[in-house]
Image (cartoon, rainbow, N blue to C red; front, side):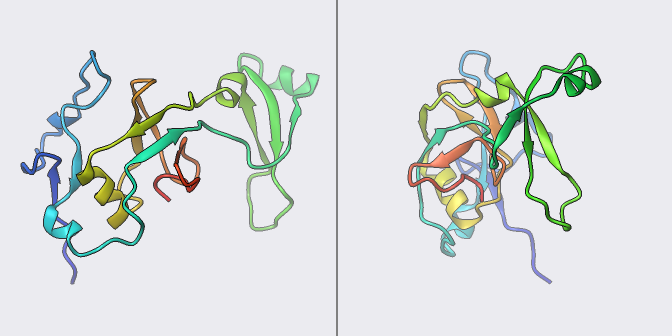
Length: 160
């Protein structure tokens, strides 16, 4: 039986069980504290390179998009969809495509954010540890992972 990896805050203090570290500072948009894998856990080695900087690229369709039709506009009245991305025909997919708003298509400010060493090492040790990360220009957190909004400076998706 394997135990859960030890987690701490970036300053090495124990992770509070009440989640108080998640409180957002309105002046910066950052949390009061950030959870990382413990120093001992990170010392076991990395499965990815330790990278400290990433770019906020936003959400992007992976396949060609088309304008929505007048019927689709009527069906989804109240939504602000402007484009439809049709996924390739694949019997293993249960979804045929996705609608996009202009805000989604325009997402991602392009800014580069640099994180501290403990956060970077946590990503290198366990790439899917986080579900979101911070954009220093937008002053907000956005999703990471295959469908996330950030790429490392080498182009790989953050959190994948």
